[in-house]
Length: 264
Ligand code: HXC
Image: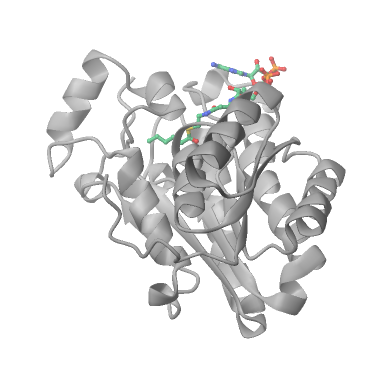
């Protein structure tokens, strides 16, 4: 897709994208590099970030570190943030994209299953935001962009763990936006609806279910990774400098119909 944004939109900035080796995270990471940012992509699995970082660096000429850290482990997150600041010279943008999901009826979901998604999505977002704030943003400002969802804007069966986790992400977005706004830190969230060609799509609405879902979406199409990338670039740009604490939905209007993308 041709970008409507200036090539140098993020030059001189350093970004961190969690879950940046695949899917929406990779799309945002690559776009930030194409628009001038140096960055680090972080994943629990080295094989998810190594080849992607090499590809981003090769295609854009920007520096792209591949870091292995589990967002559930605060010490690992702090070490990754310290390494980014030391090697890339700053940290202006954090994209909290790492997430976990699976479909499971609530009565069958184990305490550890519920807790695991809370740990990745909610605590992971907190761990990374806290580390970035303490290591860099409290003195230099910056931006945090959380990737949320729409599942909790209503009731979505089989998603109690994810809905609870993403509701926490939205609450953190608003709270930190207010608490840290005067320090030059903006905190926002994007709430994607169903996005094609993602791990979430594979887990929740592949094949014939995707066709049915598409017919329910007012715009009659699934979202694309590019849809979320464009919105992320806008929110992170100066054009959105008065947007703080917002949770911006990109779902073709699906959530307005009372559905959220999961058709078991
Ligand atoms: C029921 C399940 C389960 C399933 C795991 N569990 N999968 N329970 N149904 N399908 C339970 C396990 O039994 C275990 O509980 C607990 O969850 C932890 O499982 P582990 O496999 O040990 O966890 P871990 O290796 O840490 O893996 C985390 C994970 C995994 C979330 C379970 O799926 C993962 O790594 N996902 C990352 C990628 C991902 O999910 N991407 C999609 C994001 S989509 P017990 O009790 O047995 O110990 C998204 C939004 C989509 O976020 C919105 C769409 C509209």
